[in-house]
Length: 188
Image (cartoon, rainbow, N blue to C red; front, side, top):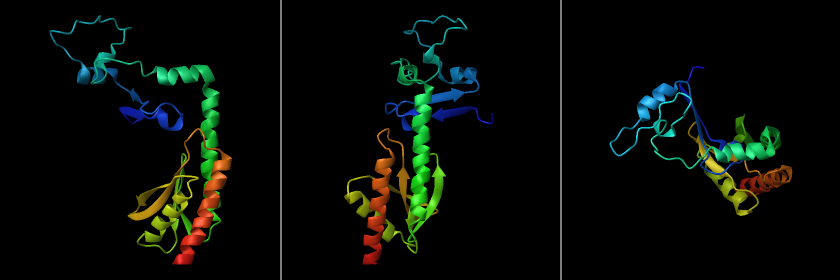
């Protein structure tokens, strides 16, 4: 309601091919005015209000029918399959957050936002021990976690989005974190 446009990345949370994106606009006319192209070598398209000429809606002048990447899986599997899969990932993010809270040496830095949560070791102002923790977790090769900065401090990110990630994989993740915390804090 307050935005002129919203971009979406369905490839992330809906388990669709990479690069699948969507743009929702409030004023199609503004989009047309920004992107319409006129050249002598381009034939005039029909100006039927019911006809959508995608050439006028983006910088690209041709289409490879990207909408099929969204439409076909939803048609084949139904919306409920996507709802259930996304709900599972949200529940797994909540579950791993609960597991992290049980580790005394760890603090949850960001609460789960969608399927993303971040954490770090306590009493680690320069983030070096947390970086070693991430390396220790990743070297086990059960999960791959990445780092980020939250309020200028290093934190480890857990992003639960793969369609292959289920509770058993998150159990492995939690176990790897516990073992790595024990390993890293013993070294300090």
